Length: 396
Image 1 (cartoon, rainbow, N blue to C red):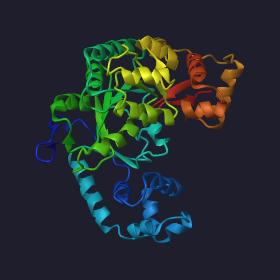
Image 2 (image 1 turned 90 degrees about the horizontal axis):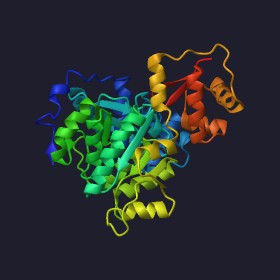
Image 3 (image 1 turned 90 degrees about the vertical axis):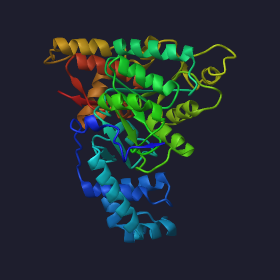
């Protein structure tokens, strides 16, 4: 595996990427907490959310049972011995600063907000790129590492058509062989931002032959990981990174898959997060379509045959129209007439402005598909406007 320490992979981009650090000590403390091996991620995340920051966790490390009564002895002991984790964290931050890597803690507004809602969200991500990780639309495209000509053609047509139907979508995948790399390359070819989620630190690139694509992605998208430098691309890490691929996205698209594989793991995680899952069918008996066909048969994924099917199912068919209207300029009505459902959405935003669509759905009792249509109508009336991270802001 190729290390970046001795030969930086992105030297030409060093001057164009700005690393914004909100609180260096908080970043160091967060990295240090991730080095505590005895604590499960879910438990660590619970403690972090209870106290609000890694710094507060460390400040309360000597009375942690006051906050978490069932904290185990091993946790208490590990929190009392943070010298080595803190030293490692300082070295990691120094490397990040030198190589223009952006450490994004859970409290950083640039952290992927969709992922932040997940029960096993990483405390910190390391990001090298230039795209917003919180755009209006995000999908992941996943599948087998043995992508056939059929699968490659599906990806090419899907991404090309998606660019016309939903021009502001971010495409995420894992930079692996097969479906992943084809998805990234087609996104780049169509001028769409694309982000690769890695199973190792940003001083590595696996597989090495995807180096040139990775360089292009940093200039039009990015690379993201939860792993520190000097972390090998072990098999278990690929499974762990799949939850990030799923959590960052609104929907998961499975292109080709055998009856077992990483793509199916990602669809399962996506379902557990309440994300929409779609799959392309394939020929009966085709080994790399069996996983897709089975998933569709078992109602684990909605069948799609085109980008148009996908966009309609997601309720995103108005995106191109909205972009066109924004270019022309939307005149806000002074006293817009609202339907009862539109008023319900407005009422929610009046109580808590700047909400993501998932939270709007929960608080309004409306389905995502219905809410998407209503938000379009409200935007066209000049009542709301979309913000970064899939948030909606009330203008009234």
